Length: 462
Image 1 (spheres, rainbow, N blue to C red):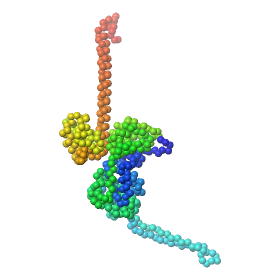
Image 2 (cartoon, helix red, strand yellow):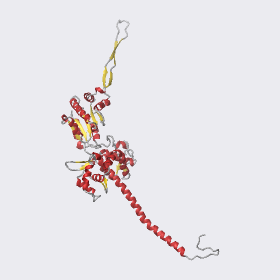
Image 3 (cartoon, one colour):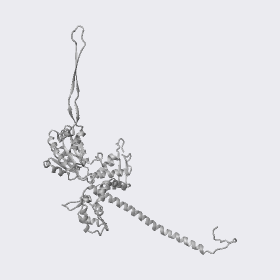
Image 4 (cartoon, one colour):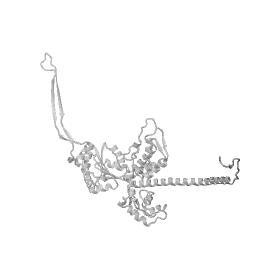
C-alpha cells in the first residue's frame, strides 16, 4: 500500500445490502438510455430487473451525477397511497405558514448641540422588525399529489419509489395517476420526476393502469450483469483492499453469482472474512483457494430463511423409488445458462449421472416445479419451450448448494478411501507380526525343559 493511501473497511468495499460506491461498475449497455430518460423534461421512469442485479446502485450513481437532490421512498407491502405521499414531505421537513405576524419598532436619536447653535448637528434613525410567523408541518389530510409535486419542484428534487411492485394494485393505480401531475408541473420544474424501481414485468403494469402514460414513461430494463462486469467488481475490491484473489476463486464467485451483483458482493465479503481480511492491507496479500468452501457455506447458511425454504418446498416429496426427481432436475438446470434448456437437453444432462432415468416422468415433474405449490421455482418460455429458474437468485442458490454437497461427498469419499488404504497396508503387517508371535510361542512349547537343582524348570520365569 502506497504512503497516504486510504484505508477501507471490507464492509464498505463489498456491499451486498447497500449501494456500491468503491466497486461501482458503469454499465455502458444501459447508461445512455438511462441518462437520456433522466435528462428529458417531463419524462417519468420505470427501472426494472431481477432482484440483486444492480438496479438501485446504477440509478443512485447516475442520480448523484445529474441531480442536486433526490428523495427515496422504500415501498413495503401494506403501505397506502397516503402513507407513500407523506414520506417525501417528511424527509423534506415540509412546513406551511399557519399564522403570519410581526412587530415593527422605530428609534430616533439626536446628536450633541453646539453652544452657539440652537439645532442639533446630527441625528440617528433605527428600525426593527420582530417576525412572529408561525410555521407548522403540513397536516396529513392536506397532503395531495399537487402539494408533493410543488414541494419537490421547489427543492429541485426528483422522487424515487423503490420496490414499487410490493404495494397493492389499488395503490399502484393511484400512483400512476400521480405521475400525470408531475408531468404537468415539469414545465415549471424541469427536474421534477417520479422514478419507479421494481421487479421484472413492473413496467408494463404501470402503463396498464393508465394508457395515457404509454408515450410519457421511459421503461429501462436492467439486465443481469455479464461475467466481465462481475469480475470488475472483484477487481475494484482487490485494489481497494490491496489484495489479489486467486483467479480460480474469482471464476467460481462469478460462476455461482449467476449475473447477480448482490451475490458477488456477498460471497466476496464472506471470503475476505474467512481469510481475516477486514480492511485495506499494508502489504499486498494473495488469497489462495483455502477457506473457499467455508465462505460458500456461510452464504448458504445466511440464505436459509428465504432461498432454502423455497428450495426445500419445491423438492419436497418428489423422491419416488430410485430417483429424487426434483433434485435431479434442478441440479441439471444449474449446468445450463439462466436462459435454461429444453426437455431433451435436461434429460441428457440427468442421464450423465443416472443413465437409466426414465423420460416418461420428466415432463410431469417439470410441470410440477412450475406450480405455486412448488413456489414456481421453474418457468417455461412458451416461444422456445425452454425451462429455466424463475429467478436467477434461485439458480445461484441451487448451484452453490449442489457444489457444497458434492465437495462434502468428496471429503467423505477421500476419508473412506484413506481408511481403506490404511487397512490394506496395516492388515498384512499385523498378520505378519501375529505369525511371528505364533512361531515364537510354538518354539517355546517344543523346546526340551531342563530341571535345576531346586526342582524348577530352567526355561520358566522367575
